[in-house]
Image 1: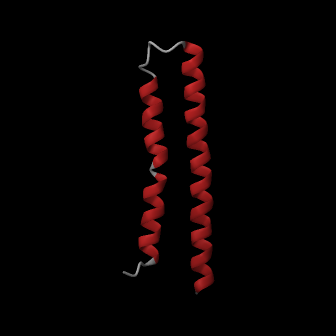
Image 2: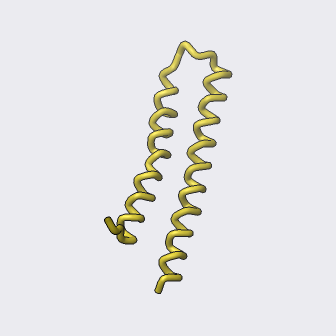
Length: 73
């Protein structure tokens, strides 16, 4: 099966949804009352960091994808 540039773009965008998943977990942590506040804060900071990290990685990937398309023309 041969894939088009649009298929590749859709796959990249689908992977990028991991940041939405992490955001959902982050929002869920707001209801964890049994976790000590310092541990909850640390967990939330890690999740925020993961969102930022993956946003940067996928942004870099998408720019690479766009540049590779320009090079093919």
